[in-house]
Image (tube, rainbow, N blue to C red; front, side):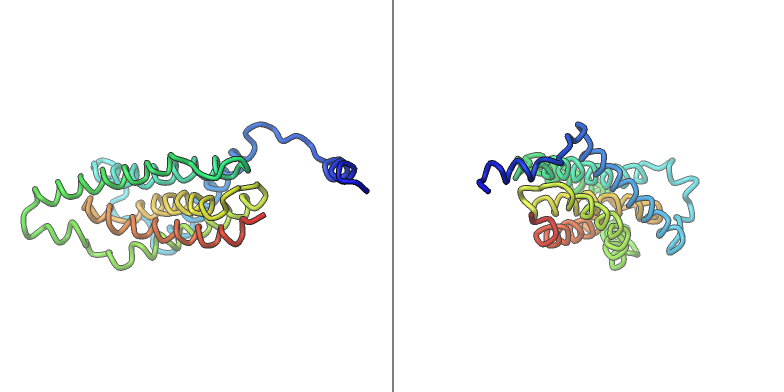
Length: 213
């Protein structure tokens, strides 16, 4: 059998994919993973004790905004990098800008705080457990995202896995924010970022193995 005949037989059963289907699948993967993570959080460590009044504070929304933006940037990157013609996505550089802006805000808050409060703005009382919980709550999101991306065709498995990890880490951190009562922006820029970074790195390492085709 010559090559044209073989190719014809291989594509014989192919059906066109509706436009936007991969993007919809990835968005659903993040949503489903975040729901599982939220259930885990509620039954494991619970909502913050002041959850009814916390939305009235600026820091609640800053924390949720930072983590959500990271999740959305990761999701956008994963959507782009799941296509076989894309092996890079310049938008990932925006993550550095978001981090730098949050860090600058944290340094401003720290610089204007009384001496006695400054250590709390950096370490709070949960610095050692914050990254651990973010990684734990991100795990179901990352597992579902990688399972979906295995059905797609990323040209750069490592970078695609990194994007999936960033989206998962941001989603997991957003869920954790509903438990965390820390109010320091430096705490957010440092310890939340460590947690999200660990998930992104895990995604890159797993993607290199699992997303190869």
